[in-house]
Structures are given as C-alpha cells and as structure tokens.
Amino acid sequence: MRWVALSVLWTAAGISPAQTATRVNPKADLEALQAAFAEVADAMRPSVVAIRAERRLRAAPDGDGGPGGGAVLTRLLPSVGSGVVIREDGMILTNEHVVQDAEKICVVLHDGSSHEAVAVHADPRSDLAVVEIDVEGLRPARLGDASRVRQGHWAFAMGNPLGLAGGGGMVMSQGIVSAVGQKLHLDPTETRYYGNLIQTSAAINPGNSGGPLVNIDAEVIGITTAISTRSGANEGIGFAVPIEARTKAIIEKLLHGEPVEYGYIGVGVRTAPREGPCASSAGGGAVITVIEPGSPADRAKLAVGDVIFEFDGHTVEDADHFVRLVGAAAINRPAGIGYCRGGRRDRTYVVVGCRSGSRGGAASRLSWRGMMVSELTRDIRRRFAIPAGADGLVVVQVAANSPAERAGIRPGHRIIGVGDVAVGSLARFGEVMPGLTGAVRLTLSDQRIIELPSP
Image 1: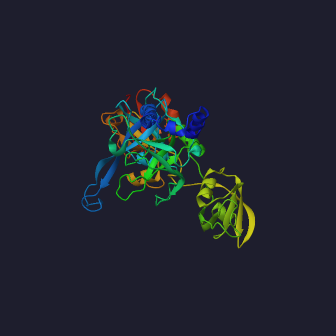
Image 2: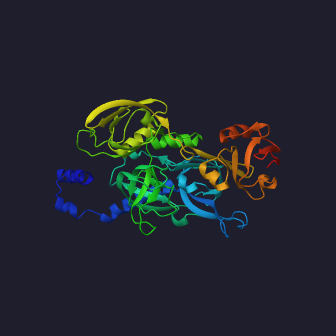
Image 3: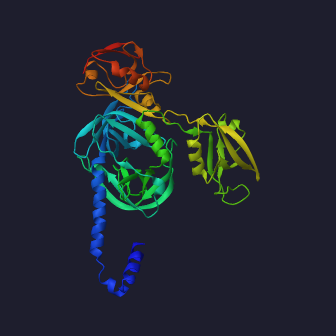
C-alpha cells in the first residue's frame, strides 16, 4: 500500500514512474528496516533474562542401590533457559519445563547480576511458569495479543540459546510468523497441552525455551517453547505458546500463586470428517474415541463414536478446538453438548469436572531461611521416595551455610509444623511466614523438633 500511495502522489505531481525509478534509494529503505530491528532490541534488552536451573541426577553405581547394593550417587545437572520480566517487582515468565523439578534456580538479568529464585508458580499443562526473584525496579515487557498475529508478520526470538547469554544481555534472532494455530503432541504423559501455537522461522535453539517471541512493536506475542529438528539444533521450525486472553488469565493466576484449573469431561477425541450428516457448520467436529468410566461424559450417556458438533454454545471446529473449549469451561457447571449418533443429532448436558493430577494445577515453591520447600507433587514424591499417604511440605533445596543447613535441615525432610501451627500447604505456610521472627521451631514428619536460627 505504501508504494501504491507514493506512485499516485508522484503521478499527480506530474512525475512519471520512469523518472521516480532513478530516485529510489534501496539502501535508505534497508537502513530504516535495520533501525526498526535495533529499536526492538533496545526496547526488549532490559526485560529478557537468562535462567540457570539445577536438577539432581541420581544413580546407583552397584546395582539398584538397595540394601547391600551400594550407596545412591547424586549430582547436580545444570540446564539453561530464558525468561522475560512481566512485573517490575521481580516476576519472570518462562516455560514450566525450564524450571521443572529444579532444586536451584538462578535468574541472570541484563546487567549480569544473578538472583536466586525465592518462589516458583507453575502450570505444567500450559507449560508456563512464573519465577519470583527478590528484586525491585525491573522493566517489564509489554504483552501483546496473539489473536492479531498473522502469517508473514515479523517475529523476533530473544533469550539465552546454548547458554550464550548466561553472563547477561540477550541473543536475538529474526524471522517471520510461519503459521498460526499449530498443534504439537510432544509429551507422552499427555500432561502438557500444546495447541494453537505460533510457528516461526526465527532461529530457536536449546536455551531459548521460556524466552519471548516479539513483534515489530516490541510486544511479547509468545513464549518460545519447542523446535522441530532432526539435528537437535535450529532448522527454522520453532514454536511459541501464544500470548492471548486464556494465556493472560493463566499468567494472572500464577502471579497470585493460585491454582490453574481446567475443565474435564473424561473423553478422548479426534477430528471428525468435514463432510457428512454429523459435520459441524464450522468443520468436522470432534469424534469421541474413548470415555473414562464414571467420568462426566459417561454419566451424560455419551458414547464412543459420537460426533460432538457443539459445546457450551460454541460450534466445534475440530478436536483441538474442542479440547480448548472444555479446558476453558466453568468447573462444576452444566454445559450443553450437541452430538450426532448414527446420523441423528441430539443434545445433552454434562457437568464439567476439574482436571485431576498432581501436575495439572499450580505447583509452587517458597524459599525461606536458606531452604526451598515444595508441596507434595507426584514427581517430588517419586524423587524422595515419599509414600502416597504422607503429607507436609518437602524441603527440596538447602543453601550452604544457611540457617537451615546449620540447623540440620536436609533435602527430603518433610515439615508438618511451624511453631505451634500445622502447615500442610504453601498457602498456609505463606500466611504464617510474616509473623516469624527470631528462632523458630519446626516439626518434621518423624516428630523431631528442630530449632531454626534467625537469619
């Protein structure tokens, strides 16, 4: 449109296209584009961070590490990722898989300063997490709206690829939006859900995960998450979780340490054919391939083979769209379902449940007096061999020479009481923490009392 408008203007002024051709300055156009890219880099640089996470790798050198089998060896395995500042008081947005099961998390700011995480709030299903550091006055990035992103738009991936930004600053790559609404099935446990992703040609490598995908206005339109590659490095096919209304609602809950809930009706689905008596007006709909016994769908008398063409007032486009609609539905509320069985359309209602699973909600950690404590997730129970019926908060990390270490606290200890207060959740622990001064008594799961000295 710019070239057309200029051509019309010059013709009206009595200047022919042949005359204007000699006045075009390709270098000036390139310099203007170059300056625009540099402005994006300048705007984002203070907001992009590098993340170092350490996970404990356990190995049994002499067999299975059981009785008589030798001691279990452990070592910390470091990994790198990226993040972006979203609040000036130290809130960093990243991928959940960047910080999952980490015993120690450090955030490196653009000035090279390193800060240990004091809390982590994570939602594995969306693969988003908020890491909190004790720093004020940071510059938050502006969150954009991925619903306005179009194929062919400029895109910039920023972060810490291969650890190259580990000393501060950031690395930037440029490309375009290759596609929108992409779907990936990467997690065999089906805990994560990657739907409606942004695909980009901007170079993304290991270490970029959790960093921002940015538009030409220096707005974050996505969080870089995955690549498709045969070599293990960038091949021009990268993906980002889009920053859209649903994503912003998840981020808001994580910022407040609240659990992220997803609707659940207990079915597996695939996309239905786009033609035939059961097709929806917007596409094929979703064919039920499996129904969990006793699930909301089972109680609603839905059956394998039913084609769902409408859910909660929305026309179902395909299986992915249906999954998103169910996930965003109000919990414990009835939702109308339009379905087709044997070529005949009918309607029913299903009471939407809440997706269960220890990794389906927000998993949080808090750091206090040199120890990081976590709620009992499935992975934490497995790592420290904690039985299913046990309760309390688990110590997952203890800093060297800290009050916790001097008091004898070790990773794997379970705390069930602080002072005279029983603590079974981080929310309760957080309520108690502000009033804790001086030496504090901790009650462990084996009923030992440990006095934790003041900082």
